Length: 336
Ligand code: NAP
Image (tube, rainbow, N blue to C red; front, side):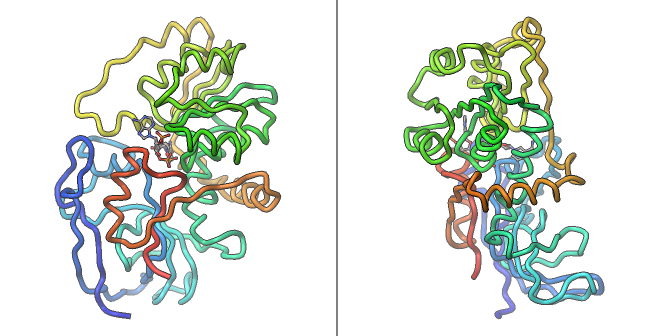
């Protein structure tokens, strides 16, 4: 082990779509740990759309970064030194604020020990981590599907969307995914068994929704916002539920986009819209992890990861995520 820690910092705050010049790789000594702290060697980084919010100065649920800060985010790592009885050397842990770096010093309250026998360890930031919990609770608690419902999900091949569709199938629903491009659409229907897919880049979403959802949409799990959402909301069924999970189409806008007025559809269909943040379900994560792990073992849930090697490639991979280049849960493999 060297005593150098490579870190990715936000050099300048992005305006609009992030560019490589907003990031810089720096080197600093690996810090010493004090009483009550642990030193973690980062193995996997999770790249997630919400990180764009952290890079903005605007008020959000995730604290804003300042220029010069290490990019914060979820990661999986191994404890290599511990000054607390709660963790020992060799433990594999997941933490939400370990950040884009090779080594992180943290305290026990920010990490959880993971069971490597359950599934490959990187799933702790994927299907058995934050995106998986988002799909599980967002669909089942907010979308409240019942068997026979028609469920539509946007960003359907992504980390959250691919799981939403499969959980909806387990719940006995008819599932339509909206994704960008033929390859992603074929994947969700052929490999994940969604009933239908709409390629929003090449197909008329409105026409396709009319064809696939003749009785209207009972649950819309929204990952993208913007024009796609305007179109879906105009085809809701009576008493529909809209689970607002994310608005990735809006994250890089410099000026707010004006949209269709959707209240008429909400009113006439007596529909409900509910925004949610996954953390509100934290007390129940253990239930979802157990069920998702069982569904994976039974072959009822598949998950696609998109792995990029090397910490230095995190900035370009993140920019790719904002442009739909990732295909599945985006991970950076930092170390063996
Ligand atoms: P992801 O799907 O793995 O990656 C983002 C995908 O969004 C891209 O691959 C791209 O797929 C699509 N996309 C990008 N720009 C788009 C645009 N302008 N219009 C339409 N689609 C676009 O990301 P994820 O981790 O699953 O997250 C999905 C959403 O959930 C995000 O909005 C995220 O912020 C949100 N989220 C919310 C919570 C919560 O607690 N509420 C938790 C986790 C995630 P295509 O090629 O198909 O366009």
